[in-house]
Image (cartoon, rainbow, N blue to C red; front, side, top):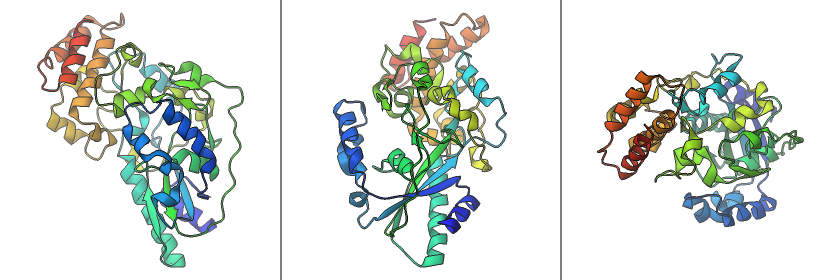
Length: 353
């Protein structure tokens, strides 16, 4: 794969590896996770069942999987980014968007780069059967990534690399070629439990076990209905995803910057004020999030999350009187919103004024 590694780098991919397709040893863990209900309202996880662990059932004829890592920290990320990002959750008037979602939709970017890699390989060896995936189908991405040497599975369940931490995307190229597998990486979490200890909602219920029903990313992105009231105060000012387990991880001091302009932070998604973001009409939301992963959540869910952040902010003694008033007015403007989930969240948040 030496030439492929060079091509991958030229296409903006940070690392590639090769895995086989026998993931049968991962099936018991996946089954237990589903039986425990840790997938919450993500019914598609249960519908796909063990297909996730059987690449040849998803794409008949698959013999090998080329895996890819793509780092996503913007090129202008400051050296002290870990402390700066950690401090964001302590700024009650600020809305926090997970780092990976502040730029372009990674599904589109990574899929396009993997497709170009396939085209280069085909130019060198001739046509072959293939299919590209980027978090877009029942694929055990982390399992394939660890088997192909991209890193090891951290206790927070994300893939970790000694050279790049965990601030990267994963993608796969299923191929009908028998390729030599790259060696798996050894694990280096040791006795560290920082990610588990610092998770705001204690969603990491054990080493390598994540209960999505307690995860902030699940509630703010995947779940469409009202957010669990018991967890609302713990979500704080996070309006799209959560990076806390990654910010706590010592390995992320080695996170790599990406040269791609795609991950540059969009206006309003880096240090946006809650009240200002709540004022976006649906058309403005769609315009500002065009080509972004955030757009898929829809305007109503965006407002639900912002309304929750506003309610949490209103309980903070750090907030100035003017800031409290601005949040209160932004919430009042949504009292009669047509979406009942938004209405319920606004009512809950106003009660905290």
